[in-house]
Image (cartoon, rainbow, N blue to C red):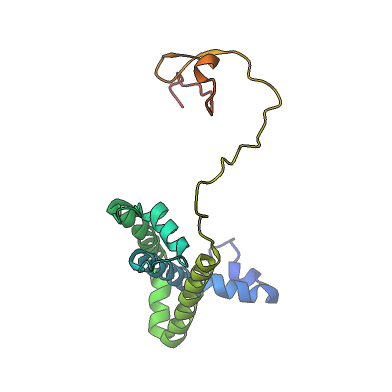
Length: 194
């Protein structure tokens, strides 16, 4: 359908644009999005229930659980709020994608069921392969204490003495911070529009 005075975007395509336009305009792009999200959800579920063998080999899985699921290796406890948050994100994105592309996807399922299933399975496998490949390449954290990353960092200009007021209204001076690693930021906080 063309609105008067507005060119049809499909009529502006050149033969070189055809493969890209076919991917983005038809059902393949939303199928790819949904399949990749499904693959991501499957990998996240696998990370959650992956058995932890004694010895190394799956250090990435333990690190992933620690950072994304709130896993405590010492006790084996998991923060279920973190698990729910991590597992919900792909589901919410998938729901939004279904809402946006429901008409296109329902037509594809109705009239191109075989091709739709093949493309979706291919995208899901590719997504899972990509995620699993990246996790396989990721190394674990070396044993022992890690060095302080900024140990070699040197400041060219010495810190000049100062006296400030902190966020709670208490005085703060350079002497109060001596010997500590400190990050200072100055924010104009009395403006009503920040």
